[in-house]
View 1 (cartoon, one colour):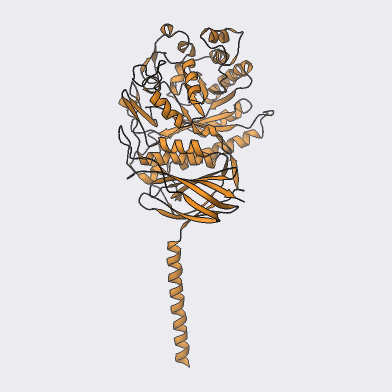
View 2 (view 1 turned 180 degrees about the vertical axis):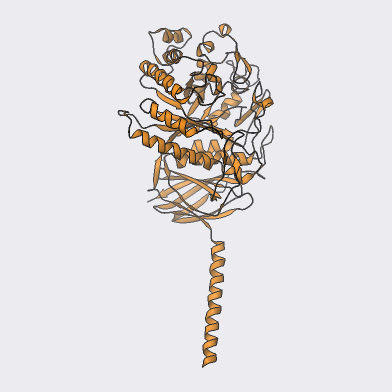
Length: 536
């Protein structure tokens, strides 16, 4: 009897061990999970987060969008091959004319007969500014590509009166001097520029006319007063922090600006450039999470100030990430200035980082209502030209996918997947060090629009495809789902003239018949967009 009991106990112990092994094996093999709930809404996605930026820097304007000597140029000097590529980006908002350039730019130099426009020393990027392309040429270009112009005024060497006169030139139909000057220049109707930035990076010591936070707030408030008296309908963007050097406190700048201008401005502008200086892939692809952290900090500051603000019936202040990109290879002294400044070449890992920025904007759609990737052509840009041709850089493709598909309401998505920790690393050459914990291999955003769901997933894993179960918590996946993938042979793959190794590929569609879930395997180092219907 005693032996029988021992055998029974041993059998139970063996079964327990086997069950544990089975459970452990199942757990190890369990798929990642993404849960979509159309009732868990973050906020409306503003299309202006897909904006871009044109600055008088290197070959962005001259030799980029405007090149009368190119065989691809029309009678106005506009490069038509570039124009077509720009149109395909579906850009809703285009910032102009800078950037550092604007802090010594006087808009009157760039209007009127071209043979009467004065050439000037361009002090920000060390080149000759011919002023052959200016306010009216830019507005014409923006109208051709179907985008809204966004102007930055000179609050460095410029005056508040100069800023007011530019609004008058652009937005007043007739009567005062500047409006009549526009008419004299051939534009009978006003341009009606809606968005105006009050300077650029005024917290940076590198900026011409650099000011401390208190002095900038005073100048910006008075410029805003004159500009709004000229056209009460305009939207104004304040210069937020761009200086994240170790001995500087960007939060102090942002807190002061929001406190002093909370009743005046409509947005606060934030800037961020990142790079893979240490050639560490996993550190680099986590960098959009730092942008997301900074977004949440400034959101908290805005919420605090809005409790004390007197804004009438105007919206609260929103965040404009009106400069962001990858910029580190062409950041040495010899590549920073002159005719061919900042001509960064991009690879697949760069495209994944841009996709990560866009995902972050979507996930923070309640507060981020504007973003402008810097810049459009040649200068840290998705489009690259020479006289006899052009090609699309890797970062072009995530921008194109998002701007043509991710609309509606941003959803709060549940993601369960493996994670990793980064080393301590630097985002930029002069930035403070950062370290990221529990970085998910899958970076996810989702947009819901009148029954249509768009899910964008970046698989950060360098070598491993990740099988993932996608669930709908409310409604069913139903019908044909389009699948688009941005990928390439390896993370260092680049595009070039006559060679496109990284691009968007339309994959085989998924057919789902009133399914509450489906499984998809996201390839290593990829961005995937899945688009279809959810029915109730």
